[in-house]
Amino acid sequence: MKKSKIARLALAALISFSLTNCEKDTEDVLETNEIDFSKSAHVCIAKWDAPNGAKATSVKAKQWETGQTIRVKFLNGNSFVQSKVRQYAVEWEKYANLKFQWVTSGSANIKIAFREGQYADEAGSWSYLGTDSNSYAHSMHFGWFNDSTSDTEFRRTTIHEFGHALGLIHEHQNPVAGINWDKDAVYAYYAGAPNYWSQAQVDNNLFRRYDASISNYSEYDPLSIMHYPIPAEHTLDRVAVGSNSQLSATDKAFIGTIYPFPDSGDICAGVAPYNGNTSYSTGDKVTYNGTLYQRTSTGWSNLGECGSSDPCDGVAPYNGNTSYSVGDQVTYNGTLYQRTSTGWSNLGPCGA
Image (cartoon, rainbow, N blue to C red; front, side, top):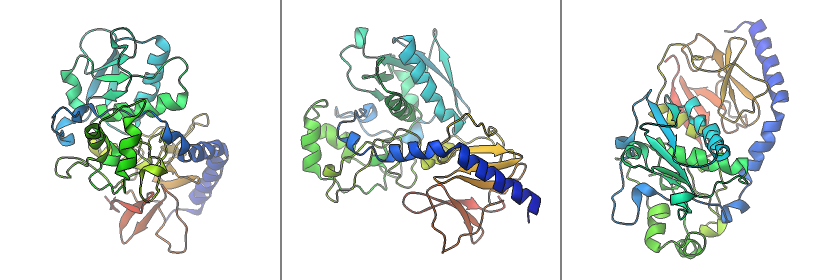
């Protein structure tokens, strides 16, 4: 049992964190309320499953080596748009045991172009899947970035395309996704500007779901950065998905299972100290006064003291009278669970 002094320090830290991060709550609300934007948002093209007869690829077969340094090179683009891509692409490095090395010459694994010069006719944005990037001289494209692009759009599209480059498929094609599509409405929408897609292209980019036997997948996550925005009129039950522009808690946890960091026995290993000048998102972890905390939708959750290898250390048992938010963690019958948008995710046994 923790000493009362430690408990008081933790409580003080939680109060301090909540005060200094109240501005983040505003952004969280903004991100989840961008439903109207979903009616006109740009969407990327699934280059790994194009409508030319190519077969669906196995995500499992397209993963990089855990711990690998991936070389990334720009083929064109001015310094501003390049800097924005670098700024947001590295968000994946916080949660995946991979590193991006930005090179200007020599060979590269990921080769990025913008809509200019020889690529002026490429209006869409896309990336080849995982290690398939090695086989193409032009493996990632941003067709609508320019000096006037908003930071939200830079973040949304960059993180999304680099998710594909790490081997992630579109979330609405998750094997366990159960979207109740109004197919006629979707066909009609994508047949018009700016996409002009055929029904076969819509089938491949939206309706096709991947077989669980060939893909890594978690529970369906409508908040995933890898999800297309879906306006309500595209579903029969009028359930909409907004234009997600940041990694969800499930995105962060899932990519860590694909590219795990080595287990040092210390739950704080690789976690940066709390920084009052940083804007944190739900699911982010920090250390503070020798304790590990995780950002939730309402504040910070105490995950335990540094040096402990028990993921349940400091996590309260489930209480049926408590209202939990996405990102909250509880213990139940010797197991750690985290609240998601659709239920509870099993994070593993206590004492591990």
